[in-house]
Image (cartoon, rainbow, N blue to C red; front, side):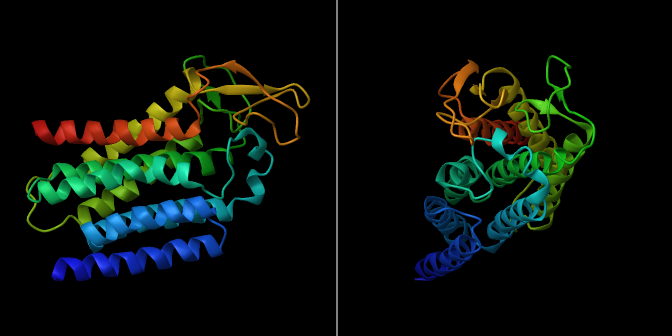
Amino acid sequence: MVFLIKVGLGAVFALVVAGASRYFKLLSRSGALAAFVLGWIVFGLGGWDWALVLIAFFVTSSGLSLIFKKRKQAVEPMYEKGSTRDAGQVLANGGVAAVFVVLHLFFPQSIAPWAGFCAALAAANADTWATELGVLDRRKPVMLFKGKAVEAGTSGAVSLAGTLAAAAGAGLIALLGWLFMPAGMVGAGWLFLGVLGSGFFGSLVDSALGASVQAIYFCPACNKETEKHPRHGCGTETRLIRGWEWLNNDWVNLGCTSSASLLAVFLFSIL
């Protein structure tokens, strides 16, 4: 009975959060539905400890998107999707974390599911903070592996501001993961550093994929690279110039969160 009440309350809370996010245009219809399902899993099966970490990620990442929305308009056409997140973006950023909530039901005393959950959100937060704050750097970022200066917002480019923002974003989730770690788990000593390092590593994987195999297109009318396909913001049809056609930004984000979780689980399995 207690479990059913917990799941029911989780559904109500998830519905409120998803509905509010849709109202403020933070999520599309598909994004709100995906957020409801994701929130239901985290709130209903995990509880408040897990929910607070998820909420921290969502509030800070969405908040940065809103605060710097006007200042990002110049680079917005380069991104595949805008600041209103759809189902693909929601699941790519939070789907891996939800898997670890379910795994916690089968291994309630193990710290590995909690570490994997926090690491996935730390990586998503690091990537989001780097994207939102990195484009504000007055200096041009450089392309990973090549060291060539490119336009702000280019996939696979890194900057000092973006790197520091990624570390701060991962650090926030790592701190909350340490503070709100559910009682009864063993092995908390290295949790903060493990989640911080794993989250930052995930953001580097995101940049590496963006610089190498992510699908990047070219708009002949604007003479610019973009993630958008089949048409650019101007309406012109874009053509693939590098990367794997199927590997869009959602798959890159999934690689970011997955790699962070796997690293965290590996670290805590040997510590």
